[in-house]
Length: 112
Length: 501
Image 1 (cartoon, each protein chain N blue to C red):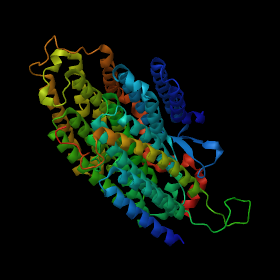
Image 2 (image 1 turned 180 degrees about the vertical axis):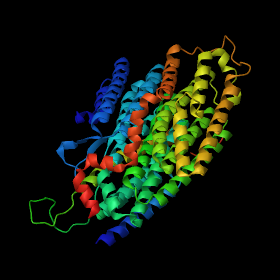
Image 3 (image 1 turned 60 degrees about the horizontal axis):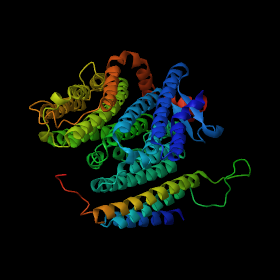
Image 4 (image 1 turned 90 degrees about the vertical axis):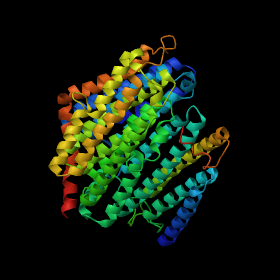
């Protein structure tokens, strides 16, 4: 199961890399969103996947499940949600003021 | 007493939220934000004195004993940086109050600055590596907002690049955290250190260490600095000065913590890579500073030279080099804020950014001219200003450690810094004045005041070095001997048992 998820992580990273390397602003932003999902899955897998154990120390016989990765992912999801929302708005404003969503045209000129 | 450690994070956050509701009342916003930063400065002085008495302090949130809960750890190194960062932030805020304009102030400028400072303080103080990630994000989100505030064409364009680079860097941070947690099974920095020492020079751990190196280099502008000159030259002066003073320094702080505390085992690999990266950064920064014709570009590349020099001290890694790192970090915050403010003021009075188009400013604004002279000397490391001691100590460390390449590069870079700034000084401040008395834009005293205060800080740091020495020595000792930090966080006996096992 773990190796299957890791393959999925790899696929997500590949997709995200493709999107980020494209020249359209919106694709790049979507790429960063996909990238963050890959990271969340990776953290989940690192903590070990579901085995049916409870995360309550001393309340059961053991073995116990590690509940920390879930807490980490929750935090990371909230952060990536906020950042994605922000960057979408920023991208929209940049598109409106610069009249372009293409990174070739957003490069800027050397004399500036 | 140890509850006070959380105040540098929590007080700016609370006042930032409060200020959101005071949007229309700009006057009150100014007063409250300045008072907040001064309060944090006061708290850090008290904590610094307390640390000398009772050693490294910590607070476990909700009473979760380490290594299970999140905690804040205050050692001399972190506290000195919090102290200087907040002094510099307060002075930059003072400049912003006089210069930034109502439109910014009503668009939540002060709440953003306070949130950024909160993130910076949190990053310095935290003892949990995931919490470090969270504090980084708090700081970065506020900086994203600050860099795009105003919404010029160029600004939005550069802001977009800055944000995207940092999102990718944060992603690498998460990946590194995932691997670290998978390898050592803990997030408490002291506990990680113990587990890493237990494992010895494990190749997997070295790989994780190198991933962390990439993350923090991106944030600090070490080698991976391609985003820095662009994004530091677009925001208004006060914001650019805050960025130059604080943001890269947090990255350097994280590098220092990572490679003194977290991964002390395989130093021949990690410190060699650090050394190479520092050397290349110094060279690239020098080339940029020499080639630049725009004052903002020259200033941005000077930031890079500073980063390279400090990390060179870390790569050398002897105790006196670490003392130098501590001194130089404090100096660099003050001096870079001062340089960016000075550059911003040059642009304000002339409306130009290219050095050849300015001339003879010292005739029109003598005080400002001499203040620029002080920044220049301070950055070049001329005694009795603050840059001197840091350079001497890092140099001494390099000789002790036999690292002559970095020594040579570091001291040559001082000459380049001097030359690049002297070029601005000669072409823009000396020479025939181009501004006639009628056209002369008045430079109000209150705008020169923040620069004067920073000049006082740099002179004070230089002359008061003797007075600061006990704190810096303590900071370097804690960095050099991680067991002091670990003892303070974990119960001394248990972790030693774990290592011996």
